[in-house]
Length: 150
Image (cartoon, rainbow, N blue to C red):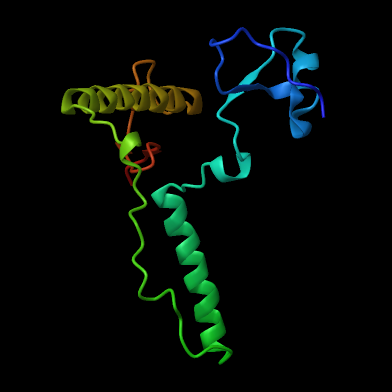
């Protein structure tokens, strides 16, 4: 293990040079810059963040339920211990955004105008309409194509 570099007294109280740690050997040399510092490195294994998002917990619980249900159906197990376990919500509240109705209306109007333009161009290319998108004869069907009157 490399020796820890001396830091100015009092400035970096509980920080360790990351390049000096055995599992991070070479980090400092690759960057060719000031050493990367990791603070509070007591026992690193115990400081790893092991919390999971509620959606992840829900997905894993659902998978466990399926596996145990399969085992129950095959008569390999008598009980499914995951049946009584409540599943958290799949929705991530941080990703929910309020969209005002005016923005929704603008998007719908834009899509309608774009759709009308594409339909007009399609009709014109097929020879079924005038340059303005109005069919020369016939009635518009649901697909946007022109149906001839019988």
